[in-house]
Amino acid sequence: MKTITSTENPRFRALLKLVQSARERRTSGLSLLDGVHLVSAYHEYIGQPTEIALSPGGLENPEVAGLLAQMPGVDAVVYADGLFRQLSSVATPTGIIGIVPTPRVAQPDRLSGPSVWLEDIQDPGNVGSILRSAAAAGIPTVCLSRHSVHAWSPRVLRAGMGAHFALRIIEGADLQALAASYSGRILATSVHQGTAVFDADLTGDVALLFGNEGSGLTAALTDQAHQTVHIPMPGKTESLNVGAAAAVCLFERVRQQRQ
Image 1 (cartoon, rainbow, N blue to C red):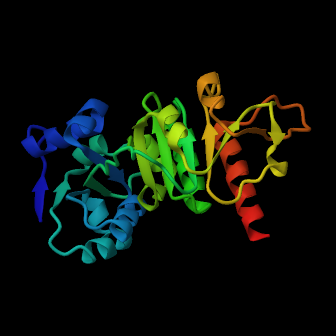
Image 2 (tube, rainbow, N blue to C red):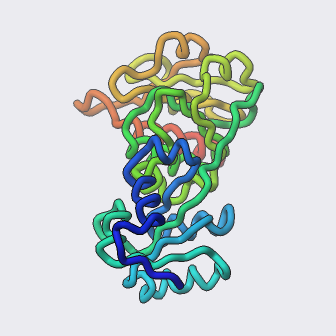
């Protein structure tokens, strides 16, 4: 297995550029999976990464060794500790980073089935949390508007904890166009307006819409919804974090479908 120790090595410099630049990741069509859990989830749902970066300590990690044993022939390179620390975006690296092609899903002419739509959500932690909740709740598709944070950024990937690979993620979606042709019911969420989510029918083919952290959903998209729902809050808190709100709505749907 090749070991790289120099910061001038072209392979290291190319990988560091991927780590540091969102534009480079978009242009190259590559994403970085930092840690055993993400690499393992990718391997389970999709296959072998294009490339594996390892630290010397990672080679001694039993989980990493076990994962590598499941991927014979994978292009794996060991980077000296100082180099690997520059490549890893986590506080306590596990010693493995997978480099994978970013899955790209084109917006369909017509969307069907249950789905979650995110309009202009900016916080990577919120998007990752919503993706994780959607996957856990059995929602197959998540659509993100053009001005939402990039779903495959390192911070969103960490927050998603592998949920990305269980979902069809449509980025840069024209949500108003999807709404015009969607075959199910569209439910827009609001802080205080509309029906209490516990009294709304969330079963079947529904699209649950969640908006920007500060301004919520745009009026234009809300107007295309069949119903507006809110989460009752008897306490003094003015609103919920959008990630928490999405979890409440998604698992209310799970509860209703169990009845």
